[in-house]
Structures are given as C-alpha cells and as structure tokens.
Image (cartoon, rainbow, N blue to C red; front, side, top):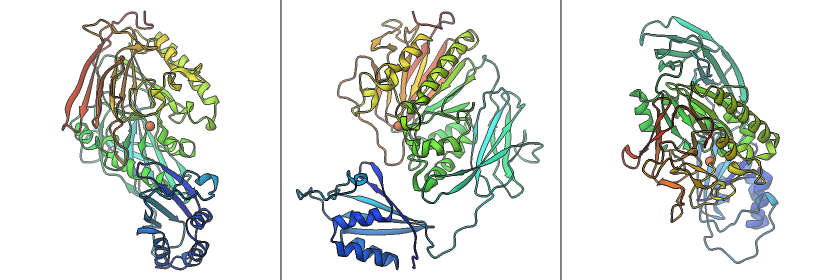
Length: 536
Ligand SMILES: [Fe+2]
C-alpha cells in the first residue's frame, strides 16, 4: 500500500481515557527524537513517505506491539509502549504541548490521521438523509425535523396520518453547511424543516429528504397543547457512542410509547468532534430510533467544547436563537429551562456569555413566575451539578462550586437565583451516577417534613442523572459516607423517568440497566398550586 504524502494528526490516549492532541508530523518527529535516537527519527521521515509497512516497522523499534487498521482515509495505529517501569532517567526536554507525556505509560494509542492519498477510492458523497432527529421549537403544533446529507440537496419532509400509502402533506426548509474543525475539515449539510399546524396528540408518519434520496419512514406523536395533560420524559446525560448502556431499553421504551420527549442533559458521544466528527455521525445514527420519534431536547456538556461547541450547535435544533446554549419551553404543566453550565468553565469562548445567560435566566424566570398559575412547575436542566457527593475533584465536590456560587465565588451564581424564583426541580448530569438530594438551599436541608420530605419542600430538589453511559467512560465512585444533604446514591448504569402528572405532583423514577430495568428510586415531589413563586 503506497502512502504518498500528507499531514498527520496525533491523538494520544491514556488507559483512563485522558487524551490530548500532540500535534502534527513535526511534533511526532520531535517526540520520537527524544524517545529514540536521532537516527531512528530521521529514518522515520524518509520511510514514512514511502510505505505504511515501513512506518509500522519503525514504530516497532520502540514499541512492544504495533497494529494498524485502515478505514477509508484514516489509518489508526495502536502502539503498546515498550517500557512499563517508570524510569528514573531524566525527562527529555519536550515541547510545552507535550509536557504531560510520560514514556512509562503502560499502553497508549496513536491515531494517525492522514489527509492523504492512500490508494483506494472513497464512497461518493450521499444525498440520502441520515442522523434524523426531532426537536420541539416551543410553538404549539410544531415539530422540527433535522438530518444530515453529504451533498447540498433540497430539504423536504413529507408527512401524513397513515402508516403506509401516500404522505399528503409537505413542508420545506433549509440546509446549512457545517465544516468540522478537525484536520480533514469534513463538510456536512444539516437540514432543518419545521412542521406546523400539527394536531395535538395525533400520531404522524413522515420521511425526509429530497428527490435525490429519502429517509425511511418514522412515526411521532405531536405534543399536546396547553397545561392540562401529563407529559412523560426520559432524562439522562452522558450517553456515549460506544456501547451506550441505556440505549437498548430507551429504544424499547420509545417504541412502546412510554415518553413524550427526551431530555439529554449534556455530554454526547465522547466526543462528537472526535475522529474528524465521525464519532458525532455515528452517535447521531445510533440515537435515531429514539430521536426520530421523540423531541430530543438537549443542553451542552463539557464534552461538546471543541471548536466552540460547534458540533453541538450545528447538529441540534433547539428553540431560540442561542444555538441551543440556553432556551426554555413549555410542556404541559411545566416550564423547562435548559442552560449551559459550560459558560462558567470555558471562559476563553467569552466571559460575557456568563453574564448574558444569567440575565436571560433571570428574565425567563420572571416571565415563568408570572405564568406560574398556568404552568406551576419550573424545571431546569444543566450539565454540571451544584452539589454532588462523588469521589472526584469535579466542580460539584467543592463547597463553593462555580455553578452554585458563580465566578470567583460571587458573580452570577445560580443557586440564589433559582431559589429566589422558586425553581422546583433541577436536573443535572456530568457525574456518572445517579444521586437524589434532599430539598436544599445553601447546604441546608429543607424537607417538607420528616415523614414526607418531598411534600411541600422548602427548597429545590436536585437530581443528578449521568449514568446512561457508553464509550470508555466508567461509573463515578461516591465518597465513602454520604453527605447529610444526599438522599440516595446509585452507582449503576441507567436513566431517569419523569412524569409530570399535574400542577402539583411530579413522579421521578430511576431505571437500572445493571438490574434489567429495575426501578431503583421512586419518589413523588408534591408542591401546592399557590405560593410557588418563592420558598418561605
Ligand atoms: Fe460532563
């Protein structure tokens, strides 16, 4: 197999999942230079331009085992490091971007991405829709259909009421190109079509695409209008593209009509930008059986950060004009607010985002409270929790977590804001476990009563549900002893069912995938219709 020329991007993986981009060809060579003798690295330069076989042989000079696979234009080379003992020899002088690298890693994996002309012809770009998913714009009687093609073609949805036969209704939309930030600069075309005037609660059949290619048919039920119905939601965060534990059951639940919508509380695919965004493509295809049948509502997590959250913003179609970073919508008796905890952590994308989002949240909460008699429940979803009792060093384990107390412990903290406006339920993820807190404000447990803590609670209820999982990420352990404000901790894969029964009663259940769907948490939150706008 001949390799002619091209650039190499290197991703270096530790066993625990940490990864960092080391850089391109010159950096690899500089690294090799320090690990091996100068001659070997020099030889690598020459041989690399000739054959893959020679490259593998050369890598083999300093590795225990080298394997490589070819997928399209991607060559993945796995290297098991030769030295396993942490040698006391002085560390070589490495470039600053590589200072975390230690040659004593037991196992590492180099993925070499060649933007080069490897022999073999790629598949022609496809006009057939893929990665079909739904979202709700917040406008009653609407549903947005989003999908991907690899060439610019028209965006059309045909829909109707009959499972087979002609689809009499048509809606047209637009597409926009999305260029991933990876080295291959892969270009996707994201299509969006808004269906309007849907009859509430009626089941529709649809397909999307154009004359150049159509999707298969999917079904969905239009959301009911008004506050007087009982929405059922699947809620989870941290769902990966590889071996996603919760997905088979979610798919079955969806086919059985158990839910009206999904809330995915950040962290998708691990990560959508990975492998030049191919992981994002794979993830979006994987969730299609769920997301093409239910509005799949999202918020961004830390794993969406690359290239300024561009994969997240491009692939999903959330309400409002903030590309899904924050928005709110009404569902039955609830007002649901989705926001980005990530603005507090990735300040290089704009410190002003913290302030803008905070002011938007306050204004949205004020409007929601004016409408509280109609939609009594205010539910928030954000990725990183304010509190958690996991045994890691995440933000939520610190007493003054950024999400809770804000920047520098005093600017734009969310706990005071949510408490002030009487938020009922706060949904979080990020920690790969399930944890339910007692009603809480500023570390004070504010149970309704000792016998019925969640009936007339005097502070918001927090649920952390980040154990849907997949990929190399594992469950997060808890501290040995629960915190006084922690009501229940479950270290099992699973997801949460949220049933908003009416204006006063909400039912929360946690499903364990480790225990074949067993319900491992079951609690009702009850609040009176009056006096919801603030906690007394
Ligand atoms: Fe996360």
